[in-house]
Image (cartoon, rainbow over all chains, first blue to last red):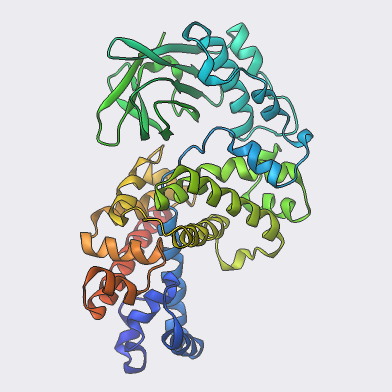
Length: 239
Length: 191
């Protein structure tokens, strides 16, 4: 049905605007009652409403994905009354040293371990079993593992690790950087092309995130944390 | 099949019978979208976490009454989140983020690939692209209504615009978005 079909009928025309507002869920009171009564008796407007509603639903879905604050899951699962057994990987993560206190020289193993734990949780692996191969990847080098320090104005402010395999992923950590609020992490491949990895939230210069990497880590030359305006906050060269 | 390979509907079905692993997988699948929507609307990480947690708990509790005929799981979850965010903003008398900012930050989502998105039934990128090319006043009107739950009358009063103009902007914007989605789906079907 075309967008203008209902209003060709004088009976339908008066509800043209109402259908859009009904679809968006913002029509209220008597207007809403009248429009619903009309839709109930008019197959054309009912179909129009169904189509508009489907599109209206998608507007909410364009909201950006943002990594929740550290500890979000633990607090949520506690509120949901879950037993610890249902979230074994997260318990292991909580046993790690606080990220804020990790000194730069400790970042590589800590980031790899943290990322391994995160990866076991977030990317579709079974939650009921130990993630297959994750620990082996990090320690034996059977898959590509690249890393590098995030540098800002000559100072090391964080670390990045990229891990290959069937589902490549990347962990990033910033500490004492100038990053505030929403930041983007991008990687630049050896052919000079920039790829967005994800959008994250930094709090007072600190942030630790893991995201899937939709390319082979071997092709990644450097990673950057950038502001929504495109200003580069920190850069890491991976090797 | 691993838990993570299950569809949203299957995970909700598991949650409906109290399967904790299903809920854990569901939370991990949706937490960035739920928190992202709440954060986009409130601009406050603390409020957004409260909203996102409450949304997840409601999904867990109400999983048995989810009706797939009335829309997708994603729509349901995000609508719950939106309504909670609106409540939180009203309760705390907080200032919501500007609708123009909402539309702008939506561009930050990872793995932008419209064709792939349509192929797998995810039309987020198509809608985002369509929002991007709407005239500013139409985009603002439709975001205020769909995301912030503002009625045409509220938008009219807040923005100092005639009610009829607001209604027309909302309708025109929605129809343009629908045309973009239909076009994208048509292109996808031809393949």
